[in-house]
Length: 328
Image (tube, rainbow, N blue to C red; front, side, top):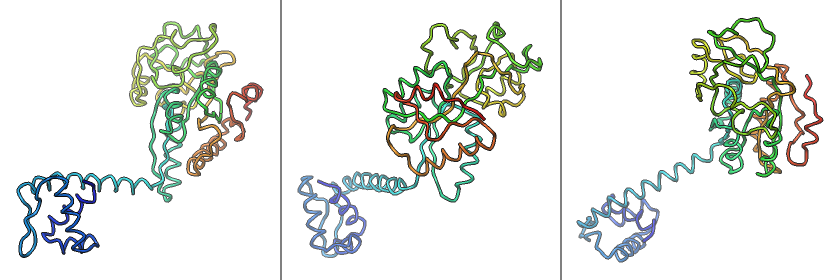
């Protein structure tokens, strides 16, 4: 028994005639009769009563018809999905970022006539890395704390990936509206100022997935995180109406309305590095490259520090990154 036999059988049952079925199937009456007879032999039952004028389903044939319709309909659905699969899809995974969300809206509007389709998935750094590695997504965008860089680049190399840095940004403290540091006029805060402060953090953000290799470096687990969420809406509401604060990169400052613009957190040489993950040695699709170029252009418009497009970070270029200075 094969799919062709079921398809022929269904059409015969619907038309009530081998000759009419042959017309629908662009075949001949003898050929259709032969296919149906082969199906009857395979099942060991008679499916049609042969009448002087046409055919009629037997009792067994009626039961088989119901199953055959389900099967052929599912096949039609799969074929329909396959045809839609020809549409250009851009699959992106990323750390949660309001900044990226704003840029994506602009990119979607700019490329609307090209009819690109997008699949966007927010995830932590390690999950983004895994999704790109396994070809679930075409590209992944992540934010990495500079203290996490060594571990991160090791993982990138081990998974045969490349990380392309796009810009650096400060680590910023966002005090909630009901905290003492809100509207304090401080030009910066230090780690000791965070003692006793409760935080709301995104559990998929850049600070939790990959720890630092240096024992004496700042550990984010040391701060009092009282709320973990993956919702920007909840975070905004909490910052506006409670005594929790947030630590993020300055790329979020324009979106945390209702809080102060953000106070730089003095962590010495620490900062946040933003970039994208792709497969090492593989050329990205032109639609994905268009997204990359768009983001670089937007960074340039806003005078955000951007790395050289040719810079690739992997196991063989760590020294390049160490020497490279991101300057406006």
